[in-house]
Image (cartoon, rainbow, N blue to C red; front, side):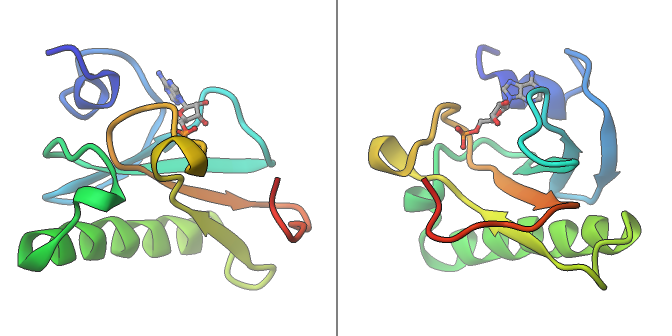
Length: 114
Ligand code: AMP
């Protein structure tokens, strides 16, 4: 299995896991861009949000977002707020080709993003 996020989902390489559902896993980003920086991925490999089509894509995105919302609440981010980001493809700044939701919090976010 070559995909690094598939390996994290399978427990084959270490990560600080913060939450898990039947179809999604949340873990801390190794290079945090905010005091809280968590990634939420689908267990089953999907290259990017651009591939999340139809009923299966809807279910995948829903599962990832749901776990992201739950982890954000568990980390105490509801009052202060947080940001979800899904970088998609080259222009979107995606570097790991396995769909992932960034959960960023613990500081004031800026807009527009870089
Ligand atoms: P993106 O640029 O949207 O594709 O984001 C990829 C993210 O994955 C970056 O924020 C990286 O810091 C993070 N990342 C890469 N490898 C690992 C890893 N082994 N464990 C945790 N986060 C990782």
